[in-house]
Length: 316
Ligand code: NDP
Figure 1 (cartoon, protein in one colour):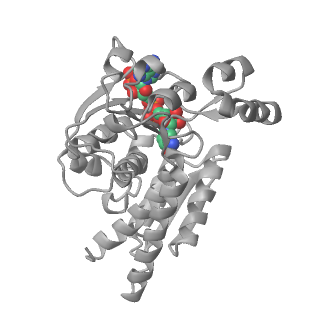
Figure 2: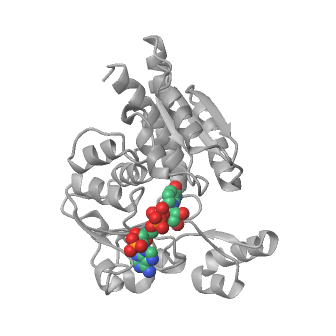
């Protein structure tokens, strides 16, 4: 397969480049839909003042507007009652012009997240977290699929990385990344193994992977001994390093100075679950953090919004 043929060092899988291609395609589709009188519309609901959520929501709204998707941002107070939040979602379910509803997570502790996600109309569930969409994905039917794993598959396919028959290992089994990631790889005919916190010998399993996906949230948990030479390594993790000594073990000479300057300036630098030095020297392909998977997530949300608009309005 492709990955066996690679020469090292690893080829960078640029999320920026792929996200730009996806967005361009979405913008074209939006223009075509407008011609037949369909205006895809996304509503993002944010609760409270979580700083990271504000950044994510603003980026989603901005991207939607850039692509011609009608978008609306509903910002509710941190102490909104469960009842009022559910009523907001139900109101959006009722509004026919709304194609996509996204409730930004995490929600405040007094809110039952599952109840909120299950209230979203599955046809408008552009995050793909509703059990109906999860079930449809599990059964291999058409579904709205969670954006991050959908973005990873899109990227691997665009880059011509062979999935059929490949040994794929997913580290992480969350409902939003790990499990749907594994299902999508299975749909592509990979032989899939899912690892988690109770996996006995993580390195032994990961080092067999032609395609290795890390979605853990632990800085540098994937090291040289976890990587099969020439493998495609996708890093979903988003963590940070504050300690300069830790950074020295994480980055190669090509990147270290820049990262040390970032730590000095901002107090930390964004990293993934994969040790960057190991990925660069041993993998066939790898996604950088930042600049990798994170950028694909927003692009795929736009793609899901257009897909929801098409499906709801019978424009297949
Ligand atoms: P969760 O915390 O929900 O899941 C983490 C998973 O990792 C769990 O299944 C857990 O196992 C497993 N895990 C934890 N420790 C270990 C370990 N030592 N060895 C093996 N497995 C372990 O996280 P998410 O799935 O929501 O997110 C994962 C990462 O991806 C985070 O860093 C998050 O920030 C990032 N992320 C990035 C996105 C992007 O757009 N780039 C989007 C979404 C998430 P167990 O089930 O046994 O507890």
